[in-house]
Image (cartoon, rainbow, N blue to C red):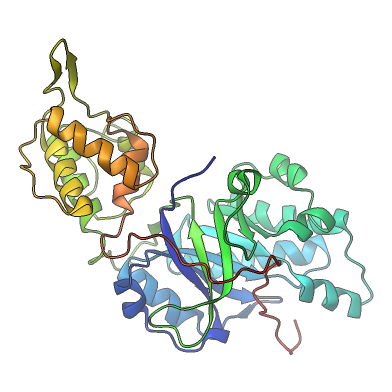
Length: 366
């Protein structure tokens, strides 16, 4: 069962009006959804402004394209439109296929009834375009869509590495839903500094990471913990999957995560308790992060002994991780994504159990 929330953030479209991304970032948001466009190559009117701001501030994005396709050819074209917008800012970011009730209504107006079989094929067509281009395929869905419009198992078989963006406006998810969801849209009536009025809010159970397109601005703020980790890993001699030092860019991308998987920091058990085991720059970095998150002021001496093990257990309990006193991939990723100014969890104000929608239909030709 997925326990850890790597980040919380809104999903934003033109309907949210002008947003203050700097204020959003300062509130603790590190991940967000952005509507790139809809239908027949209609780019969201605020997309370029929103995308440029997220790129500049180092906010991870999950793009989505609101579909009005009712043939596989149209769905493939929509996938290419989404890719065209993504490529101006990022390589390899998540891109979601968003078919909703307004999509069903529009197809019916055109004389096409979208069945579960048809919608499944449309999703596969769009997501294969995304996957083939090297981006991460995401399906936006809810309980009703899974019952009446999408054969999820078939989509998973056809689209390797599929992620699920699951919407349900409730206080908690069942264990089955939590295992299903990589991202959970839990309200449409949330509030966030920098956004006027209500907004959709999401819990990210998956840290997607992303790479910016060549020539784009590197992340300058908000990535300090990742940058410090990269420097410490390089100092301790860790190398990525190609045997190269990490690029010290503050981005938690696939190479940084590959190095994370190689790390195991721990104390050494002895007859009298616990002695110093792991040593080095990464232990010192870990001790510093424990101090920040737990509001402690313990020595950061680079020696993983009984005291650091105790701090690790406390941090793992705080963050809902397995309590083993060992610093491995999950613990490292948790603190890389952790915001010390907003650690109390994500607010859920909606108690009604209902399915969600972006409500992004446009009253123009799709």
